[in-house]
Image (cartoon, rainbow, N blue to C red; front, top):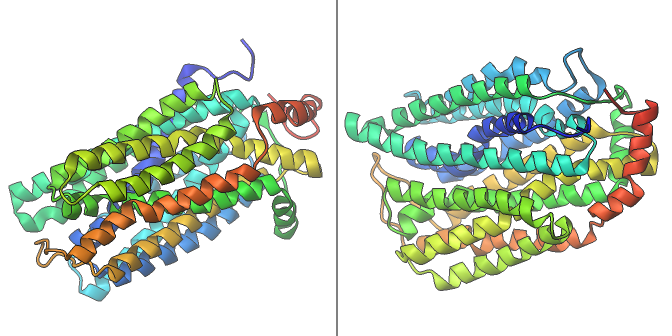
Length: 465
């Protein structure tokens, strides 16, 4: 067996880490805005800033963490030790974020800011090492692609668990203990998810191995940024990440509103609607692995996003209020097609950085992954602010004393636009931009891989242990 091959258990262990990450990612992208407006009763105008400012802080902390991991290593590895150090703080931060103390409105808003900022800082400390891990698990691009297929599959399973269990349990708890206990139900449900995430990070640590060793990099940040920004293929991926994340987050954070107000559904329909999308995401992970064995992965990336835009426009035009069946079908198709690029994107980051190393002779790996995470958080920040502003623009009415209000036709149509055409435009831009990315498997194997491997064998830069 080749030393750069990964066993099934190791791929599962690696995937368990993203399952832990997605306890927060799925909660933030799908549940959190709804939780803040309809459970914690914050003003949508304040939500826009709450979704923007902490994530902006997070975006810059990603770069700092990426540079730190580039310049530090331990006898237990460069990235894996952070899973042990931050697993428990990660779980505690999740619980605090979904705790709703009985403060004044100003106190509640301050508490939301503080706990959200705490969460995203801990999130950065553990996820930057995690997303950098594939580059040291193996130097083989096909093995990285396979590992990322496992990773994203388990991520979607975790997302499925969060988005089925949390709203249904919270609603059931409120029904059993009184309508005012909905917030308590959310806290208990997310606490259970937090404990699961903590355990999964421990499992990821004990089942993975860092095979590729890199020298510590101590270049000044200005030099590292200059090297990184000269790598045009990496900058394309960074832009794609910002644009694509905006599309994903905008669609995800309005799904619960759409199911309740556009389709006229209950908490069970909300869970079912979100679940339908996540099932589409999960099946996309499986299909992507099969398709990329028969089709150029970069072509799959491009066309999946263009088709997603067409489906988004079609859903807006074809689905009318309370047209439940058609809405579910379109939502499944959108989530299936859009995520065919998932394993591809997270595997080609390493390849774009290898391309930069071959061109410049310098490795900027930690900052490269930190920069991608920066781009992702920038996309989240912009989408979060845009989502809050759109709720204000479309005159969304928050519940009064826990009772949902009737929304105007203008608001309902706005929720439909926020789920379909608006995010669809971002996916269109994402697909078009990928026509400028040229590192296919063929190009990588012919022009990059042998040069990087040569350095590994001779121990000049990375070396396989």
